Length: 330
Image (cartoon, rainbow, N blue to C red; front, side):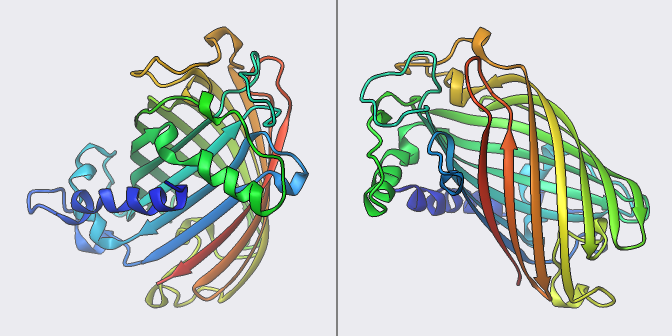
């Protein structure tokens, strides 16, 4: 099946969990939960840099709704404190990875394995606008492997654009469970009016797909609303006093210490993958940089980003890709 179908289907799988909301589920005070209803979509591909390897394609779909505050998953998320504004959401991820040469129909030893996944993150953000601080925590659940449909998706796309046919997907990481927990903390460090913001970021993930800890900086420059005012957009009732037109650039730098990466090392439960990288071959420190331009008006935003990452395993190359994003306040 195609990843786009799986992408939607995965979201539908979580509807009973998200919307079959028991009365006993955690229910914070109504005035602490933002009424924003937001939808964000991104599409990423490395073809814009004339490459076709490593991280080669990806999509995300992020939905923020007040009703998700009643999800039973929130019981295990980090608690919010009094006075913090909370947003509840679910974010779907689909990503595909390939080795350096996709024309080879045999396993490329010493290169990155073929891999793809689809999973959802059910999360809560707790923002203190006065302290310029935000805490986000989430539960990741989904699957990695052929069930994500990346073989058919990439083969069809390459057929349409008359690109080389990928021949190694039969050797991809096998089906396994994605289950994990993540948390991130953001704190404003410096600001110059509403034109410049410097934000410190720290995050950690523990799970079957990714286990890592990282820290970084986010710089925002231009005509924009304060970062900790909302999640980038706001529904009409919450836009009073905010700039309707936003046009700004961002630069983000991050370093991670990597403990486990299932897209290279295989799933934790299913050890039958035909080819994986050994733990000794994984680069334990990885740096990533992102440069973006954002244009927004009212409840709609457009984002274009270029992402660069250092080698993730021994003998690999630096890599880069482009991501496009659309956000809508409902």
